[in-house]
Amino acid sequence: MTKKILVLIPVKDRHKLRLEETAPNGTFTYASPQTVTEEMAAESHIIIGNIPPKLLRTSEKLELLQLNSSGADAYIKEGILAPGTMLASATGAYGKAVSEHMLAMLLSLQKKLHLYRDAQNREEWADEGEVVSITDSRILILGLGDIGRSFAALTKTLGAYVIGMKRRPGAAPACVHELLPAEELEQVLPTVDAVVSFLPNTPETKHLFDRRRLSLMKPSAILLNGGRGNSVDPDALYDALSSGALYAAGLDVTDPEPLPPGHRLWSLPNVYITPHVAGKYHLPETLDRIVEIACSNLSSHLEGKPLKNLIDLTTGYCK
Amino acid sequence: MTKKILVLIPVKDRHKLRLEETAPNGTFTYASPQTVTEEMAAESHIIIGNIPPKLLRTSEKLELLQLNSSGADAYIKEGILAPGTMLASATGAYGKAVSEHMLAMLLSLQKKLHLYRDAQNREEWADEGEVVSITDSRILILGLGDIGRSFAALTKTLGAYVIGMKRRPGAAPACVHELLPAEELEQVLPTVDAVVSFLPNTPETKHLFDRRRLSLMKPSAILLNGGRGNSVDPDALYDALSSGALYAAGLDVTDPEPLPPGHRLWSLPNVYITPHVAGKYHLPETLDRIVEIACSNLSSHLEGKPLKNLIDLTTGYCK
Image (cartoon, rainbow over all chains, first blue to last red; front, side):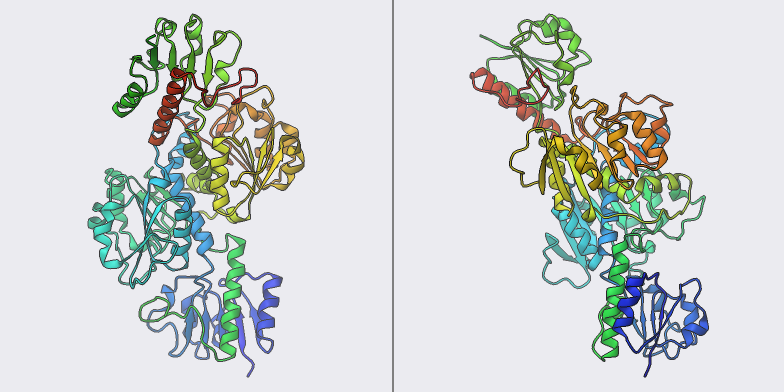
């Protein structure tokens, strides 16, 4: 049977060639999340790219939704996907882009570049005083998937002491010095200089960083969030940062998102905010990697083989 | 003979103990560059720390001036030091602090964090588009002393291709992929994604980056200066950055310095300026390292052994 394949990622010619070679009997339609319609979705067997979830209501033929994101939270809610539709993430595509972005944020905050930028905009040659070195930093990384492991490798190679944390810890991978189970979060928080979250949006992670857990961190510590915004309670974070209970935060994701004009987090000098741009397609290599994951899963699906990055619809994590 | 030793660096108790153990027969005076007088300088045999040069006019007894800086340009001019006075720098103390600061600048510029900070201050959730990865970057490092080598090691370990440049190249050290002689600057400039200068202030380096050499760089390239401000012509740099002929610059040093309010470099969005703070004592380890260098040279001098970091008064470089 000819499969109808709907591609919603901004492919270049070389990517189209790769996809069409992978499914030579497929019928390809190229569109974008902005131009796609419910009718196009309804007749597709395979969709590659993050389609607006509401357009999936009548997609009974859909066998596989291959996302271009590593987060899948918008698609695991009841009633979005028909029973039997497989959902796969693009885990593996974003490690490099997101980890480098978050490293730039961490080093900037350690060297006070955010404050120097503000002074520059006031045309002030003003010394902001002591800084810290990444070699003296104990870093806790929450979420040790592709992105977390990439970030761990970068900070470890620069000389930090790196602690990974997973729900189900096994042997520590080479990118960390230690691997701890999630239950030990509260014991380890007071001992680290930076906490970096790459956690997805799940019921368990909502406001994980609440008032109490933020109060366990060192006053000199940095909190970074490169996962999903709602793992940090924004009111508790505001209070910790504005009172000096926490040195700084670096957020590529926020709650709510986008952060609206007038939100009080915008104007805190010791928070660094970027508008959920660490990933996307901003590093050209990311799109190449997404296409490779899509081709691999497309090929496996057509041949009846097991897919990679399949999402467990009950937990939101990879199976 | 009892040596009179004047210490002008902000030593802590543990540093005093180290110095006084090193010269048990010495007479120590502790002051600061702000409080020191010409009389105190005139009776000293050894001075540790960057004394204002004009206070050295009557220092005929001075045997050794051990600076706390790696640059020595203010002390090599005719008439500052009496003949026979040895001048030693603190090369080796600043590698870690300065290289980490300049790395933070490089990554920030690659990930557009400077533009995101400006958008944050306008409370705008605004996407700045494509970024680059350090793993795709060819980086040229000018000046391969302690600071240049430290920076080379950091960027090489993160995956950049690193080219070092020295006046007198020999075998390439492990921290670079290639080592080129200074004569090849103009051939290599069009091929690199970032140029990082750690050059001292010497007659040869003044406005090395003039209009012509800046025009040889890629429009997508980044120029970083962590050495001395006058190796870059500020007018030529302004024109290159404002016309889009050069993507961005990161300057911890400027010409003039301090950069006065109203100087047009302040307001260029694609220049990142920090007020000569990469070194100083901002990383506490830097002061420890300066004290160790001073103790080593103090001990060698008292025992009549060769000193390290001696400055050649004719070139301004280490002998």
